[in-house]
Image (cartoon, rainbow, N blue to C red; front, top):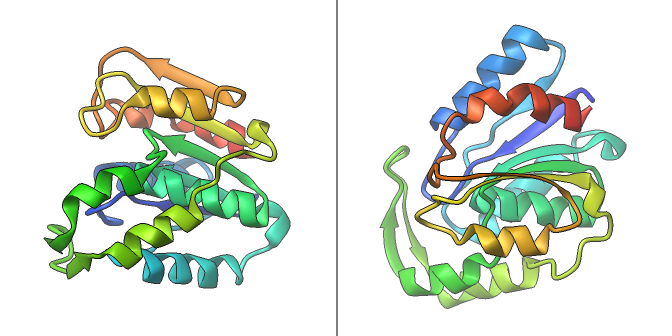
Amino acid sequence: MQHIIYLHGFLSSPKSVKAQQTLAFFKAHFPAVNIHIPQLPGDIGRAITQIESLVNTLPQKQLRFIGSSMGGFLSTYFVEQYGGKAVLVNPAVEPFNLLKHYMGKHLNPYTGEIFYITYNQIERLVQAHQTALRKPEDYFVLLQTGDETLDYRLAEKKYQHSKMYIEDGGNHSFVDYDKHLPDIFSFLR
């Protein structure tokens, strides 16, 4: 493993706490590992195209992802399309059901990007939805029951045959994420 792609969540960025903790951990303990943390645009189609471009520059047999929230949904899509392994942190399972209530204009507070959630973007998420996992053992899912944005039970059900850690309490940002980085690295090896 020489490359890990960290995919942030909706309205987030590479500057998020989890992204920065991930980067700092790997720089300190595994400097030979290249961490890619792309700034994903709010437009889902453009985000998928950007990730595909990055994936196509990396060794296909060793694809590794860490995905938070929407990044977890996208990580699942790419592992199912290209193979590899992923750690999912409070992943979105059916983001199209959530985002259909957020149609319209949005501002990413980290980047200042203004974008629109449209019906076409919701449809792109539906198309990217993976109803079944080919190799559930390729996923390690970290969930906190106090997630105020997503129902953790959806991920618990979808990834029931995957390695899973469920912690009572917490929130959507996943409290004490950095304490799990050694286990995340061990899984992705």
